Length: 441
Ligand code: ASP
Ligand code: MG
Image (tube, rainbow, N blue to C red; front, side, top):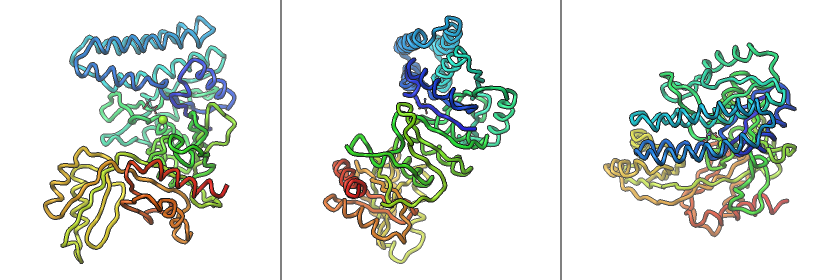
């Protein structure tokens, strides 16, 4: 059994929903996970924001717009009047629930509103598949997907709930469920954070010990560089989970970073595929080691980075300095991305400025602090075991005429990170592609 997850653009119109229905009904008894139709979650966030700030008219108007879009999809999707009416009833239920919050001024019920996107997309797919004679069984994510008090998914709970739900319908052609949505420790409706449908797929994959998890989007796999900034990029055929984790974290938007872990731990391959080109090989991510000719597989960039240099005369020959530094970041719950140390100082980077001033104030109690804003991390990923000589030299050579603020290498066997100014990002990405990928092909 496989888990097939389709993102928002893959189900973004009646035509796309039909495509996905075609695709999944040929593939055997799998679990299909859907995101909300593209744009829907953003619209739901907007509605909830209007409600929060008391702009009831703004909320009502936005629900009306949403309704119009779904009515059009309903009209275009169904030939069968019977199934169209059933789907319409379900969509109207969601819209009525959202509208009910425009009448009570106390509850913002944000999470409940955000959950309607996936509930509506799966309702459309469910009725459409039934109308075509596919025996599809809906697995309600709110009945099995749960996070604990720390917002961590409860894999044992998920397993204990979903398996009996599936076993009750062993004759199903397909199972269908909502990505992203879940319940929390108090039983309330919650979610796995924006982009969380990938994580849903990975968690279900782990729970049912799936053979493979397929993440279907509208690009043919993970590319070796960012196509928005580099003209000539190509899909990477294979990545180790750790390489994928680095790329997902450092900017490759195609896969949600949290999604990697459950699949990796349970040794379930993840395949990134393209709904527009279903036969393209895409990218396979697993725990296997497959050496490649060029060693370095891909480059990604992470924006809005702040670098902090922390220097202290007392760091010389002292221990405990780094502990004091890290303690401050921990106090403000601010993750550090990159670190570079020397005998007299340490530089770290963070991607959130939220507590920057407080962090600086605390650091200044025992060190001198300088800050560089608007920086970018360029992350070079591949088979960078330290015995593979020359690879770091090629990357550094590619950046020869770009000022580099920090370099981090050796933290894992899969990554070199460079910190540069935002203004040099496009140049750096292109220079790396030229040297690493295009020169040899
Ligand atoms: N619909 C949610 C979002 O837009 C979850 C997802 O698509 O992964 O973030
Ligand atoms: Mg996504």
